[in-house]
Length: 252
Image 1 (cartoon, rainbow, N blue to C red):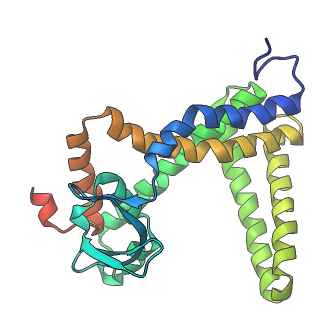
Image 2: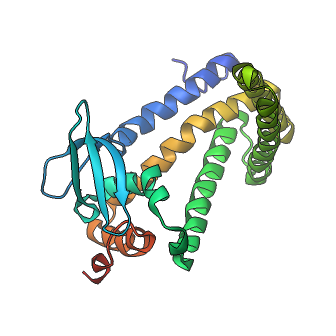
Image 3: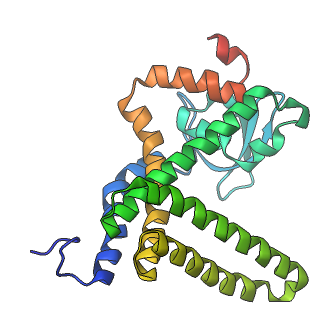
């Protein structure tokens, strides 16, 4: 019986099956790692949208889904998963005062940038290795940042074009997206000495695999690690340091 990697299958069939294989392996973990509810320790979950974060009082306001009702409570009541959701919400980031950006925030900013970059490089390397069967990680280190830079230059150009012709925004976005994807795929294919179809397949597979690995890593840390120690570490070095939790959390 042929497998997704059976050499007898056409290339397009193999490329189409790779993302499905990744979803099949990682989707159960992702579904448990991501949820739409806000969970408080010892209380019922609240389904809704975070509409406001009070940085000085450390309180969050949730608007109940399909209702005009709002509920307000301390951020320290949130469980670990909900704290991560709040940490990356625009309401929390916008609530940080300009004069409150201490050295801890810059250190954490570097960490938050470095960790996704490392995970994305790993995902890109895995994707390219499965599709091209070339193991050398140096190719991934060159191909991914190079594709990002080329895409960045093109995006800046498209933003400039949109500013000059705002009435053609949709057309510029569609054509620009296609050109950007083509150029990035071509660059990746050159690095791996493959066709542009291989480069496109790597980018598509990587775009699916990377966020799944990222979410699964956070989930696995809590699932298989010492939950109490993991919570203590993140509460002290992440949530309290960034201002999501009050300082008293650090003393507990």
